[in-house]
Image 1 (cartoon, rainbow, N blue to C red):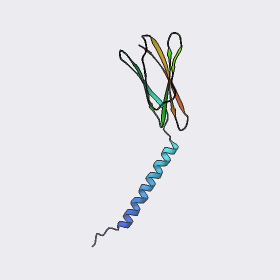
Image 2 (tube, rainbow, N blue to C red):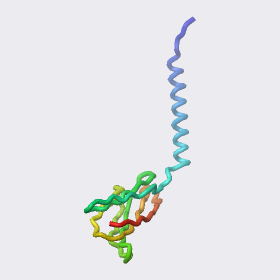
Image 3 (cartoon, one colour):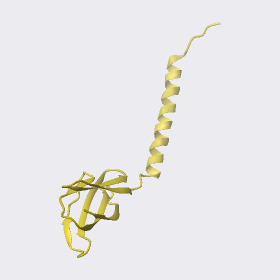
Length: 119
């Protein structure tokens, strides 16, 4: 009795299985694209600076922030879209709110959330 392995057949079988798995995975990704979502916004403050950090889920994301004074509703800052998810401001004491935007730069899909905070 011989225990010879047909390496060529084993290789072709493995190659076929891997090809099937890759195609199956590709199809899953095409049919179920990553959904753009803002998970949370963190406000990090110290004596000098206030940072707004956007935690979002998605693919190829860009971020923008519009900052307003709470009482007067006056727009203080309107950033352009950027790759960084962090916005740092030097603000006097007061109440503020920010409208934060997350955009998928490939599809243009956008998500918007608003947060209020006090310095």
